[in-house]
Image 1: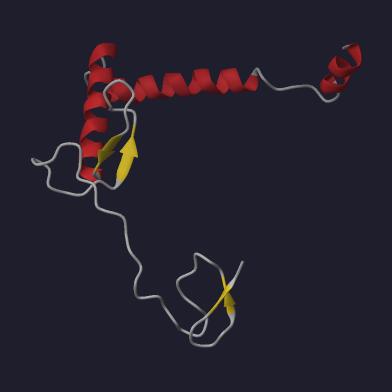
Image 2 (image 1 turned 90 degrees about the horizontal axis):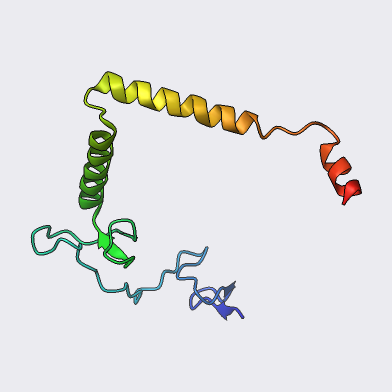
Length: 122
C-alpha cells in the first residue's frame, strides 16, 4: 500500500521518509541508544550486538572499540594456547592451516558426470 507524498502527491512506500521531489519526513524517531556492555567504564553507545562474548549465549551489545579489544584478547589467548609466541610462528601456523584448508577443498572436487552416476544408482 502506497501513501501519497505531502508535497507532490506522487506515491511513495509506507516506510519511505523521502521523496524524489525533495520532501523529507521531519519526525523520524530513532530507537533508544543502548550503552556498551562495559558501561559506565566505556561510555560509548553500542553499535553492534554479538553472542560470541556473551554469558550463557546472551546477546551482548558492544561498541566497536570494545569488540576489537575482546577480539584481540581472544586471538592472544588462542596463540598462547597453541604456543605461537612470535610473529613468524603465527604466520607459519596460518600458512599451514591455509594449506590444509586448500587440500580439503580440492578433495571435494567432483568429476564431470559424477552427480549423474550417483543419481541414477539411487
